[in-house]
Length: 256
Ligand SMILES: [Zn+2]
Image 1 (cartoon, protein in one colour):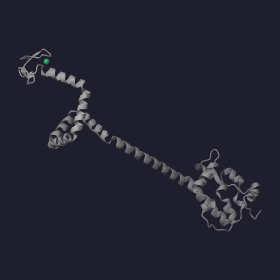
Image 2 (cartoon, protein in one colour; image 1 turned 135 degrees about the vertical axis):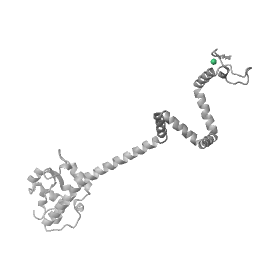
Image 3 (tube, protein in one colour; image 1 turned 30 degrees about the horizontal axis):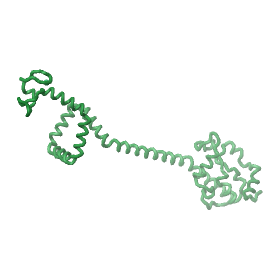
Image 4 (cartoon, helix red, strand yellow; image 1 turned 180 degrees about the horizontal axis):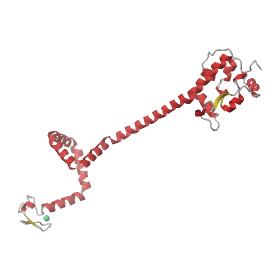
C-alpha cells in the first residue's frame, strides 16, 4: 500500500504508475490524480497543443500521411469493425457525422451547382413563356396583316409580290411594340379579339385603289390599335384630313 502525495488516500500499488527516478520506482501521485492533473494541463494548454500538433503535422506531413495510409490498408478489417461498432452504438450521430463530412467536402460545390441549375431552369421557363406568348398573341398579328394585305391586293386586282414584313416596313418586334405604345387603358394583347380591339389603318384602306397605295397604307406607321366598336363606326368613313395627309407624304390616290 502507498499514500498518494496529492489526494492523501492510501491505495494499493497497482494504483500508481511506474517511475524510473523515485526510490520505490513508483510515481508519488496516484493514477487518478495524474489523470486529473493531465486533463487540467491539457485544458489549460489547448491552444498550445493544437498549435504544436499543427506545426508537427506540417513538418512531418509526408511521413504521417504515409504512415496513416499504411496503417489503414493493413488494418482495414479492424477499422471497419470499429466503424460498425460505433454506428451500432449511436446510429444517429454516425449518420450526422457522414452528413457533415459530405457537406464540408462537397457542400459548397453542390450548393453552387444547384444554384446554377435553378438559374438555368428559371431562364428556360421565362424563354418558354415568352415564346408561348409570342406564338399566341404577337405572331397572329403578322399573319392577320398578311392575310388582310393579300385580300386588299386581290380586291384591287393586284397580286402580292413582296413579303408582308417588307410592305409593313419593320420586323415583328418593332411592329408589335409600335402598336403596344399606342395602347389605351384596358388594351392588352389578350384582348386583341373580335370584340376587343383591332389593328386599324389610320388612313383607311378604302382610300387606296392602287397596289402602291394599298402597300403604303400597310406601312406600320399607319397602324394603330382601335376598339372594335370604334373601328366599326370608322369603317369606310375617310377622315377629312386624309387627303391632306396623302398630299403631305407625297402619295395621292388618283381617285381623289
Ligand atoms: Zn491521488
